[in-house]
Length: 269
Length: 250
Image (cartoon, rainbow over all chains, first blue to last red; front, side, top):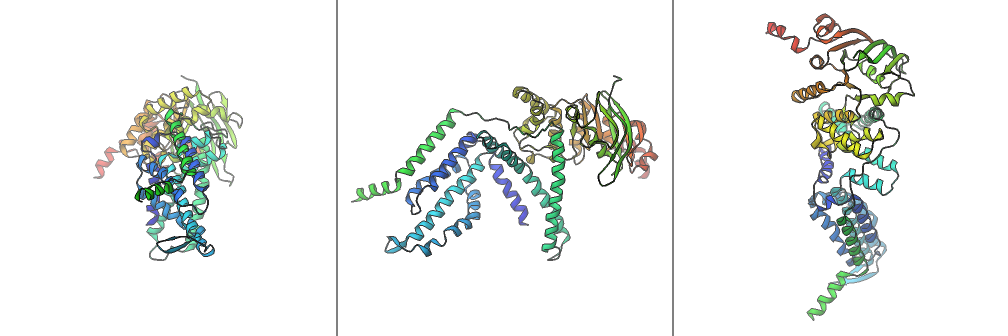
């Protein structure tokens, strides 16, 4: 059953984040800040830009290789959400028909270029966000957000989301298996039973919330959860941040691809 | 050690839907005593435990822990003394990593970070789970979860341990380890369970609850070998007391 597989799949990204490599050891705050700067630089390119975006692939590729993350895991997830980006850009080629360049005699309209530019930006930003999760444990991200002064209530929501996502999924899994065991063929799989299952899940979650709240109270909870500060900013974190931001800045302001291209052209002449 | 630490006087509790779960429960528990509470499903065991640290306030009667009477105002103080291990460790372990979960209580007690760290390490050492420190709870086995749940309570240095079915869902080896762990604690313990062999092993005293009332209270040896009493309460002789009959049957 596909739900089982999805469940284990979700856990997979989480398992990856418990590896111990250079990028995993970096301070989560630095990783969040650098990744956000990266996304900011990438989306700041004008809509017809393609060549200038290419050097930026170095950052996700760096995270992927240095973090020892299998490409398939990330590629599959990017592909999975790609329809959103495709729908955003799909009408550009229809509206924007001015020919911008010709490649081997084929005229290419501005619409196609901006469409591909959207897709490239999408791949860059989404894979970076996914990799950020894959190379930083979720608690680490929560700690970082808290220390970057995100309001506590959001951090606590995220913490609980992470903790109980797996519990809730397991519960769903059990209910679905029980239904599978008692329904034969199409019978028992109608929308009607599905609605009931959702309502049962909701009621169970409310019950569970009550029990968790009791457990919190009995350990002295008074409306505030303090996140432990385990990471300390080290020199290599600062270097990593400074180095990446400088690189991004260079990539943004100097078009390396056309620079290399021009040089190659002149050397072949 | 004659000073009592838990005292219940005619405690009654009625759920909002009208179900009367406790119909006048009275007993005293002394310092360092281990008490097993057993009874049929729905007899009121869990309700009784939940009143012990004020999650449910009795509709009538009095509870006092140490010298503190249990009231709405004093609940916070009482919760520092009573460590509560819930039946389902997934409810108990709500923080994203084992370390943070065990640290939750000590942090709320207002200890300094160094003290918190010391408490966490001691508690995890005690239950033999120090190596699990950075792990998220959803990646632990049931036995490990149970041990960490106990550590998270022990880190607050409670005077009394209250446990609801601590040995359920454990494999025999984990169960045995848990029993040995419980026996090593010098705290007063109140353990609700259907695992009568465990009660026999860990607790010198046993209460049987039926329909919200205490129907038997005495030494575990005596109560848990009273076959008639046990059968009236949907219970059976513990296996370790049942050898002769097993032989006869076969």
